[in-house]
Length: 348
Image: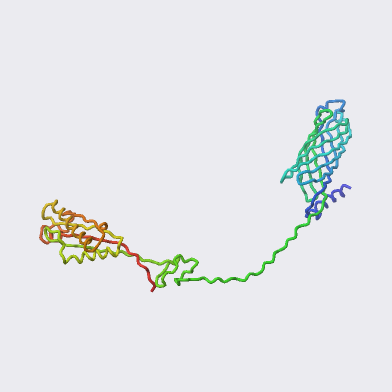
């Protein structure tokens, strides 16, 4: 008989039901539990010094929804009495409301029971349990409970281990329909280069660039940059600030440069030889610079705000010799303009 029970349990666990999904409606369970009587009962002769009891029983649960069950149970209990020297048998029956915690195997319960052993009495109980599913139909459960005797006021304690079998219809697994994907013909998109600069329109940042110029990877004109400069050196007669007519062409070249490169400005430097006093030479060199500036403004229409005239006197001599040649070399007005120029890089 024992071998038959073990074989039946193994068959339940390993049966195809383990792969089913069940819409559970009822659960039928068998259990064994241990009841520890109140220590006050153990000392009372009118309770036959009742001690612990061991039970076997069955229960039936109605599954209401995902959170609530209702359970009825009945158990047969054997108690130790008279300080453990004798046995007494009793029954227990009752009803519990069970609340299942969300996303957990834990649950709580409360109910009423009727005990019949040495004496008969009613009790209310609360407890907690844990459910372990073997498969969709079969599960083990364990519980701990406290029983409050409402007739005599004693409190008993109990623990329970059980096995449940679920009844219900098998849920139909949803049918998976694999969608048919129609073949989509490849679409060939023609990439345009509207300005024929070698860069496609979808990345061209500079539309309509001339076909004769080179462009960068974004389709914009490439430029080269180089430095340009011009120098002016006007000689003066001794003790004079008058520009010789023959040297006006040199001043015009400076004016033309400034007209071409409109972002430029210039300092016109006046210098003198060492003849005369330093103060006089400083004044004379300033007048020489102003003479050149006046020609640039009045004759060649250069904006005066772009010109600065400054005299340095004899502080920046080209030659320190006290000779006619050295004096002639030092009597001068000089200017220098340098700038950078960007030019379009052309093809070929």
